[in-house]
Length: 200
Ligand SMILES: Nc1nc2c(ncn2[C@@H]2O[C@H](COP(=O)(O)OP(=O)(O)OP(=O)(O)O)[C@@H](O)[C@H]2O)c(=O)[nH]1
Ligand SMILES: [Mg+2]
Image 1 (cartoon, helix red, strand yellow):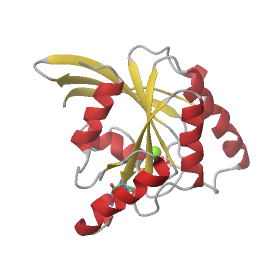
Image 2 (cartoon, helix red, strand yellow):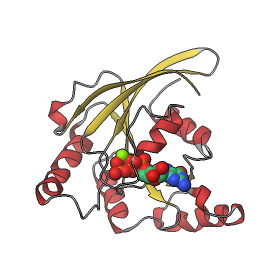
Image 3 (spheres, rainbow, N blue to C red):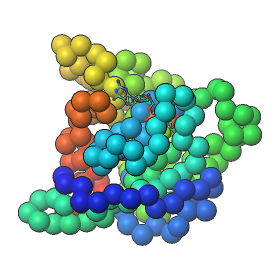
Image 4 (cartoon, helix red, strand yellow):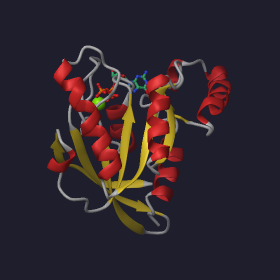
C-alpha cells in the first residue's frame, strides 16, 4: 500500500458533529495510551499528523484523517481513518468519562461509513476486560473488528510469535502483531484494511 497523501479532515466531541461520511471509514479503538494515534501515524507514514503523547488521555474527540492510497496495479482509492479517544483512563473528569460512552458508542453503532474497527491492545497485557467488552459490543452490532496487538518491539523477538498465538484463544482470531517503532505489521494491517474497506 502506498499512501499518496494524508490530511486532517475534522474533529468533534459528538459524532453528529462530524461531516457526513464521504468515503469508507475505519476507526481505531483501544485503551488510553495503548498507541492508537501512533499506529495511525505509522501506517500513513507521517510522524506528526495525529497528536500522540506519553500522557494517557491525549486524544479527546473523534478525529477523521483522509488518506489517498495507491494499491495493486495502479489503482487508487480514498480511506477515512477515525482516531477515537481511549477508554479505561481513570483520571479523566467524571463528565468526560460519562460522555465517552455515548460519543464512541454512538459513532460505532450509527456511523454509516464505518467498515471496520481496528481494536488495539498492548501485546504484553493482552486484551483486558474492557477490550473484550468492546469486541463483544462490536460483534453485537455487526461491526467487523480487526484485533491488533501493538508495542511488540517491547518483547524479545523470540517471544513475539508465541505471544500472538497465545492471544488467539481469548480473541478467537489471531491478532496482527504491530509496532509503531519498528513498523512491524504495517503491511499485514493494510492488507486486512484494504479488504474490509472494499478498496480494490
Ligand atoms: N515502544 C513502543 N511505544 C509505543 C508504540 N506505540 C505507541 N507507543 C508510545 O505509547 C505512548 C502513547 O501513544 P499514543 O499513540 O498517544 O496512544 P493513544 O492510544 O492514542 O492514547 P490516547 O489518545 O491517550 O488514548 C506514546 O509515548 C508512544 O510513543 C509502539 O508500538 N512501541
Ligand atoms: Mg490518541
